[in-house]
Image (cartoon, rainbow, N blue to C red; front, side, top):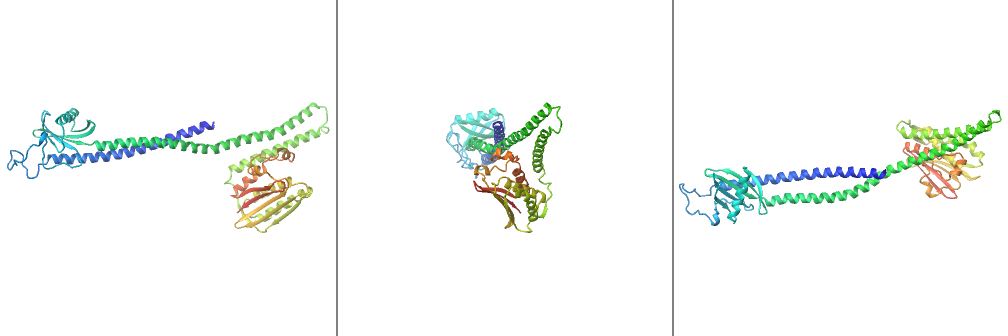
Length: 424
């Protein structure tokens, strides 16, 4: 399932980026193409004007003041005294009204057959301007009517065309390289993006499995005791009271479990709705200690506490009390026989730090990172005998996160464990 999700993410990502690259490359190409075409048109226009303009100090044959020194150069090439730009390769052809070549003008030596082929290409297009390829070169032409027939000006645009062609090749190569890089990059980030979803899904599956497991045990006990009651229908309720007691006890366990689960869900869904205000956390912690003193005394555990008075924090009084109750109750449950529990509340810089520690077996390092997960227990059999479900620390963590605080634990195996809560 996650492989398919990753592949879909990868395909969508690649298609989206490919379309963006295509649009970007197409835009750059069109802008470049328009610029090149504009330069070509301007150059062709200038060359056409240079061929149309009579040479300086020159009168066309038959006119007054005509120069007898003007002569036709070799290969029918005529120098009219106004050469086109030197960087351009161009020539001019003159025809009669039947498109028969009558004169050529060029500043470059060209074969007369080439002129005929160029004229044939231009005439076949039947356009005033056009573009064609001849002998591996690209040419553009413009045709204008004259008194004698037509004048056609040809300009070599091979260099400009090569620029556009090379631009396409460059875009193609760059695009392919970028797609290869994007494929591996997108795959890497797709895997990283899917990982939190996979972890959340795995946690949800584990949560459902753990909740089902926890509910299965009391349900089995209730079912068994109900069968015992049904098998002794003739007996009195007084004689069957212990079975009813077992059913009631397990029902209460299930009720507590479901209440805790609902409580966690409500906290996850109503983080913004919790009422918070400044309150005396020193007084709140002291009240919890007074509540727990009798339980601690019965277990023969020594309690030491050091509370800095009149410490104020911003939050929900009842929720913070619940956290203190959970941590103190856990400390008492897991303290070794005739061990000790220590609680301190101090202000450090801008934070109020609560520390609850006990002497006992401690928590192994591999468990410290997961003890705040729902249903997680370092010793399931030992915890079950003490009536725990592994939800207390999860509830405490959720409450502290609501208060934008921190909660964590440090432990020395075989010696002690300390839980720290930071509030501001």
